[in-house]
Image (tube, helix red, strand yellow):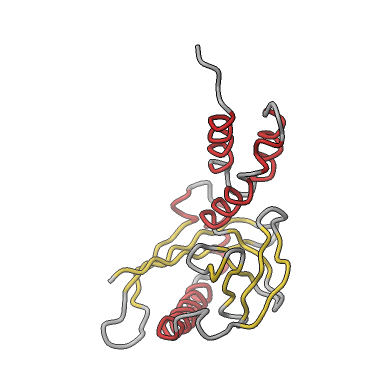
Length: 195
């Protein structure tokens, strides 16, 4: 039987890392490092692997302006630089340390102007839709939804047109509710656009 090469070990280790469950990436990194014959094997590929995982999982970080920002390949301006369009910033993100290390203002060329208009309208209309949904569901009903063991009572999909003028894209807004504490619940919204 042939001996496993270092390159094969690195590929296997990276496969484990990229398959990490959301929120458990660093725990898997620790476990994989403990299994390797030489810890240094993973060091060379770590920046690339960490970046791939973070952008695929759309890691959520805090903006210096006080709101949340997603680290995604779609918002990547340059290596380790990601758009925060709401805050008007480009964030510097260290994939190894898993933290924002700085920021700068958005410069011309960082964003497509025609897409910014669409993004602003989409965000505004989605926020209004979510606000109207959360205000129209009476508290006893939301409490029953959140406490239910049935996933269908905790999730709801609302087909919608985002209302951006002629030929407006339509989409689906999916809400997932869960108990955050014994007296409050949180709602996660996911939007899908299609023409």
